Amino acid sequence: MKAAPISSRIAVLALSLLLPALARAQAAPLTLAEAEDSARTRQPDLARARSNTAAAAARVEQAYAPLLPQLATSAGYALQTNNSTAVPGNNSWAPTNRFTFAVSASETIWDFGSNWYRYKASGASLESQKQTEATQLSLAVLQARASFFQARAGRALVKVAEENLASQLRHLEQIDGFVRAGTRPEIDLAQVRADVANARLQLVNAQNTYAQAKAELNQAMGVERSTEYEVADEQLPALEGEDASEEALVEQAVKTRPEMHALEQQAVAQGLQIRSTQANYWPSVGVSTGLNNVGIDSLVDTAWNWNLGATLTWSFYTGGSTRAQVRELEAGKSGLEAQLSSQRQQVRLEVVKARLGLVAAKASVEATAQAVENTRQRQTLAEARYQAGVGSILELQDAQVAGTNAQGQAIQAAFNVSLARAQLLRALGRD
Image 1 (spheres, rainbow, N blue to C red):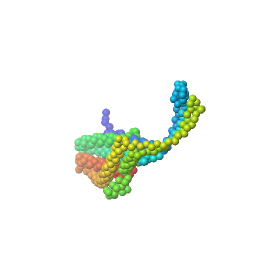
Image 2: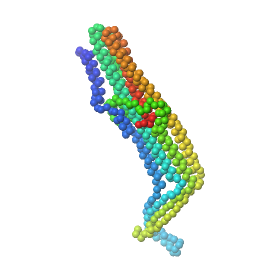
Image 3: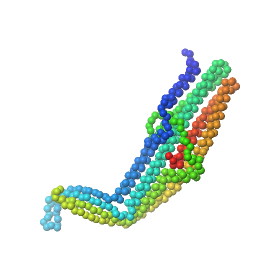
């Protein structure tokens, strides 16, 4: 059987490689905003942070409850005898039914601020948890952005690989014609066939890397979906003040980073807990009142009674327990202050690294753009020299490889710029 001509095989191969990409391109590509919104609403770690905030809000309500009057009702029944030494001859063991209904109210009117400071401490803890949730939100958005730009770079590398394969296929067709015409040796055709095989392998690897990047993007967005979609060709625009001085950016970050506010509120809560515990050194005063309705052998023939009382409770010696609790809380507050100082240093480090990374990335974009242009010119000259018969297949191959590498470096540089801006946004506490 006669083999199909090389041009026909090339056309079939190119079509088989392009069909999957064309199928994906029919659907609207995933945008950066869509990826961010998905992370904000579906990321499991963020959902867990929100549940922690809801729990902290519930604890505030629990801490407020002791500040309000406490109301209670009760009902009881008892079968009892009524022997009594107060009434001579009343020594019957005949049982009687006793019905009791009661309504009571109580209120702590003064406890030296123990319940009040506990309530205020729970409010500060809630504010701290809200800032912790904001921290988790910023991390989720950063991860979504980083994964999106990684996938975007993967898509661009697939395009480079497709263009490289298409170029190699064109060379194969041209060189096959030269060899048939006897103007080029057979070894040139063998070399370009090897180049086509390598280009095909590079395309497969690029497509696989792109699919893996989209799988990681799905996880960052908190979704379970196929990777058969495209990502939009987007970058983060220049940030306001991204070229400001290091100290100006650090000062801004310290004021806005939610981690700083979370630790500050934790310290406030710890201080209020100390005051609440110190109040246990002193007595508490409460009042209570109630109505009792009691009936013997009948639910109808009952009698109401009212009572009013006051209590003073003072645990003036607890074996040193209160003092030890205060010392523990004070040590915890000192630890929080040290943690706050450490966090301030961490914020500075993140700002400096993101700023330097952005400066370097922007410089590399300019350098790689020049490299791409130079290699493109080199490739054009190499192809012209080869067709004129004065260049070698190795020269053409080297120019092709240099061009592909330069395009890959340019894509990596663009990815680094977007990633550095995303990291700087996170370091500055911006959404």
